[in-house]
Each structure stands twice: as C-alpha cells, then as structure tokens.
Amino acid sequence: MNKLNICVDIDGTITSPYHFIPYLNELYNKDITEEQCNTCNWETLYEIKMDKMLSEFHEKYMHSYGEASVVEGAKEIIEELCAENTVYFVTARSESLTEITKTWLEESGFSGIEVHLLGSDYKVEKAKVLNCNIFIEDNPYNATQLADEGIKVLLIDTNYNKGVVHENITRVNNWKEIKEFIDLYK
Image 1 (spheres, rainbow, N blue to C red):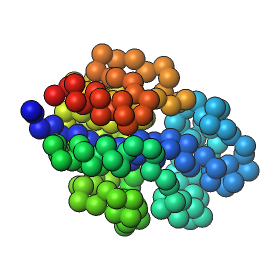
Image 2 (image 1 turned 90 degrees about the horizontal axis):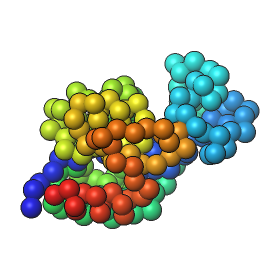
Image 3 (image 1 turned 90 degrees about the vertical axis):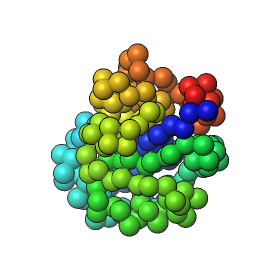
Image 4 (image 1 turned 60 degrees about the vertical axis):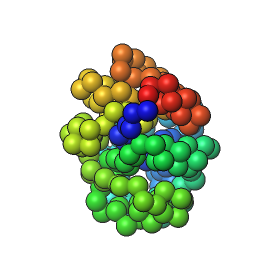
C-alpha cells in the first residue's frame, strides 16, 4: 500500500460550501441563496471589492470561522486517511486567521494535522513543496491550477464549480466518495 500526501482545503470541503453566505447576506443586506451562489467570486455576488469585503467581514463576523459545522463524514474519513497517509490542510485563509483556524480545527477533532494558511488562492507551489498526490478542493480556479500542474484533484461538487472539467479533476459529492476514490487510487 502506497502512502499518499493528501492536501485538503478547509472552507467548502470540510465545511459547507455556503457557510459564509448568511453572514454576507446580513452584512450587505442581500438575500442570495445557495442556488444563486453560482460563482465563488464574492465580488460578483455582492458587488463589493474583495479587500473591502474581507475587511468589513472580519471586523463584524470574525467569529463565523469558529461557527462552521464539519460536513458529514469529513472528520471520520480524514481520521482514516491520516492513519495510512500524510494529510495537510492547505487554505487560502490569511495568516491573520491562524489562531481562530487552528482553534476551530482542534475543537472539531482535527488536531495534529499540519495547517498552511497561504493568504492566497494560489496553492500550486505549496502543493508541490508538500509533494501532494491528491488535493481535495472546492474552488474551481484552484482546482484547475492544480490539475494543470499534474496534481490529481478531487473537486467537491458545488453550485459554483459546475463547469469545471479536466483530466486530472474528479468530481465528488461527499466524503464517502472521496474515501472510495483514494482507496482505489492506491
């Protein structure tokens, strides 16, 4: 059995892809639904520049990072994956979110897994440094960049990544399918 290096994004993979939508709706007095969330570009959805949005969001809703629920199956399957592989969390979250992210991961049962907060959606270099075999992602841009570099991506199916097709991307619906794919991949 081969030991794999598996990178896992946090937001939209081990948490709901739509976790932040209610907070953003409240902040900007919008009523965007999960079905309407057909892009991961929040600037397009909320018509606010990203720098301003993040500043306002962090000022008022920093607590939202600690309120996310773990999606069904993620904790148990990541535990199983850690027993036979090396798992890393690789997120676009900025370093300013290190403490709240690590605390949330620990409280959610993910202690002991190395965490990399990049502050950027560009994850290719970190994936290469970690010799990533499989990257679990929800963001269509990240998935495509990683796949273009020859990294196998398991893309969690969401409303905002429907159009993504690539020979190195496999679409999955849940963590059970992720585990099944990885078991066959080995």
